[in-house]
Amino acid sequence: MSKRKGVYAAKVKRATHMLFFRRHQKPGVKGWELHKSLGADYPKVLDVLDDYLKSLDLQVKTVFEEEKTPTEKPTLEALDKARFYVTLRGDLTPKESKMIGWRIDDLAGLAIAISYIISKKGQAPRKDVEDLLAEKIPGWKVGLNIDRYIRYGYLSQDDNQLLYLDWRTRAEVDQKALIDMLLNVEAQKTLPTESSEEENEEEAE
Amino acid sequence: MQTTKNVKLGREKLQRIIEMCMAIEAHAVDPFLLDVDDIIKVVREYFPQWEKPEDLNLDAETIHHLASVIKLQSEWVKHRSTSLYADPFLLEEKITQTPREDMVGVFLKAWHPVMEMEQLSLHSLREALRYWETLVPIAERWKQFDITLVETGTATRDELIKQRILGDKVFSEELEKFWLELKEAVAKKGRDGKLPYWDFIGAETYEETVERAFLTSFLITYGYATLEIRPLEEETFIIPFKKPVVKIATQQSISIPIAVSYDSWQKWRRGELE
Image (cartoon, rainbow over all chains, first blue to last red; front, top):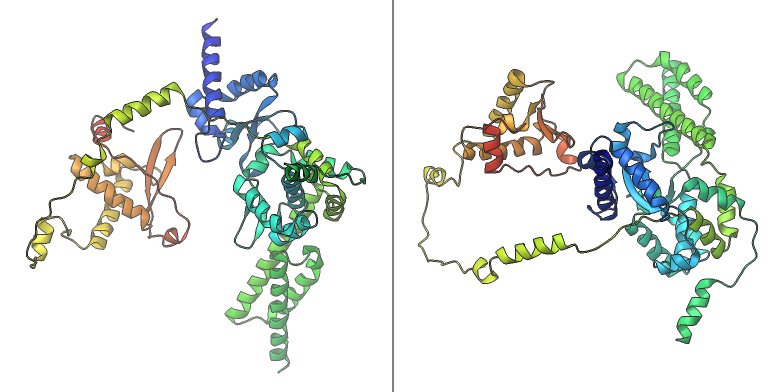
């Protein structure tokens, strides 16, 4: 192995450790931390890592500060201020989502809350979101669910009871794809819900 | 008489415009409900009649709020032109009409959860064991203090100063003097109105250095100065304010721990610390 390759291999290893293991309260690593640890060529190291992760259906995701995604190649300064995560590259099946601890109701509630807030230009009164969720989720669960989304970092709430999209939504959700797909959903037939099946299973047990 | 009546009417109109603008700023009303041209006409019509400062103030306030509304209108247009824009009514309709399963299906296609791992490593276990070995038993750490009963008495101010319970100057005076010293140091040795932190707190003895770091922390907390931290370069600068900034204490502030260890002091003395 050439010396240069060896250096890159070591840097990729270090970047993997930094990105996979949580170092702060929130997951992910700030660009300047990677800069400091890996050197100024860290975007190249991340490209190599991203390429390697492709085969594992994972990716290195860059979230720019305050959603200022640059239209052209980002500058090193913009990258230093950005936050980097490792996320799933592809998508999950409903069964897999259950495996990582999400009930279909809760996930649907999250999808609705996020889509609604996007449609309202990134902020919506909590009361409106609660009313929307209460149409399909039991009332007692609505508030608990919203609090849970806030706790996980998908939503945030200010003193005026306005809800916003938070860091985890920016890191994990492709907002444009979500809205496009939602608008393309055809008018639907009602099927027996998975949660009611689950509830029946629980009752049977 | 006619002019007085006109002025009164003008004031009322401007007040109403301001209220309308404020409702728009609070997102209670659609920003396009306000016809900016009409409002400007009204403002222009009454402007020559304003003589009193409070009327001119009202006029300026109206323009200020009007500018905010124009900003909101521009944001609205910008949002509409982005690829993320979708008609909220259409979207709301879709959200209510789509069954939960389909909603989840759609969401799962756009959702890429963050990966993270939690695992003990041999290195962390080794560190933990080393810590455990050097940890002093609780019985030794929490030894009972021998308390001897003493008679209560009085102490003079000089005695308290000698025991270092009181400073020999009033603290605020000492702080002001220290602030002037900082300003002088920045004027003499600083660049761009700032000075490397260690160059200001560093002194001949370690004790004096700690005392200066202690006072510096108060300069920053009380708004006499601020810090500029460059994480990449690992540099910290201190910047004195011309006047104490009171709002600093009212804003949400963060604490910045800076280690002033004996080693760091020695490094600074040797010129190894930036």
